Length: 357
Ligand SMILES: Nc1ncnc2c1ncn2[C@@H]1O[C@H](COP(=O)(O)OP(=O)(O)OP(=O)(O)O)[C@@H](O)[C@H]1O
Image 1 (cartoon, rainbow, N blue to C red):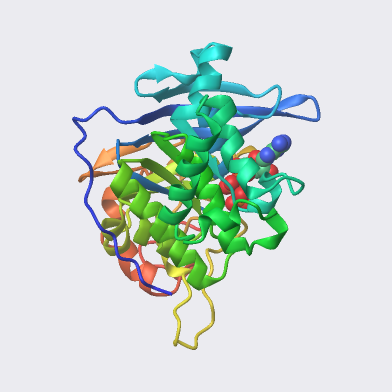
Image 2 (image 1 turned 135 degrees about the vertical axis):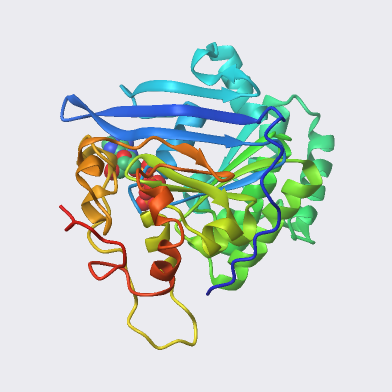
């Protein structure tokens, strides 16, 4: 489905962002030695802004979210800055970290069944968090969660409180998870593939609920997804990630109309179009994880425009015409990549001056 309908433009950059990640690098121990999974993530989420983090499997999207929650695997080495409202998340004391996770930031996962106790009722799940962590009296907590269930489209919320997770469909349970996330009145919600396990109609409803929560409650949202169209429709800005690096940040319309990074163009070209019978296009080559790339551009192996400089020197994310891009050749490729996104991707692409390595 090509239904990209971005809604707003870039936020006012003079406003302090809710979240600021600068040059994040993460290494995690694999077979006893540290392996890089995040090379360079630089990303801000403004207050009340929804940012879509898109990219292929293994690019490090979930790891970025986990770094923001300070929930990385044991032994992870972290470099760079992760700030929430100006405060360094890495420097938070255990007590401050508990408060941050309890009331400033909330996470919604792909598979709600995996994040709820199947032996407890929906009511226990929703109410106990409020009673125990936020010290809200039980009766008040029940009233609050019923109102939240109504807000996420569950009209018979009071009845649902006595049900067990297995009695609810995936879509209903994901709404319960959104209600749970909203219950603590967080400033930021991290939604990690929240609709991947749902059918298309339910996907749209869940995204609409998140979007409404963003607008009504002034929430900042990081939406992690493989689905560029979904992210474009639901978010104010998109950050494209590949092999542990953010390679382009733009508003949805800008990205679709004028991608500046060859990987963004490849992702755009790979979107299936309903009603058009054609061979599905793919980005040539295999998606790489952070620990598989060398010192040069993370996309060099698969790029149709690769040069010697790309292989030897990693491009940094830099500002260019109101957006950010990490490509040595972004100026030269401006305008060349759009026909690429609309047409064939690969060795026959225009502007290619060297064989991919
Ligand atoms: N606990 C872990 N231990 C070791 N490696 C891990 C662990 N979790 C993730 N990885 C690796 O880190 C890299 C980034 O993973 P991550 O889950 O962040 O990617 P992703 O972009 O979210 O992918 P997906 O869309 O498939 O969830 C991958 O190479 C993955 O194999």
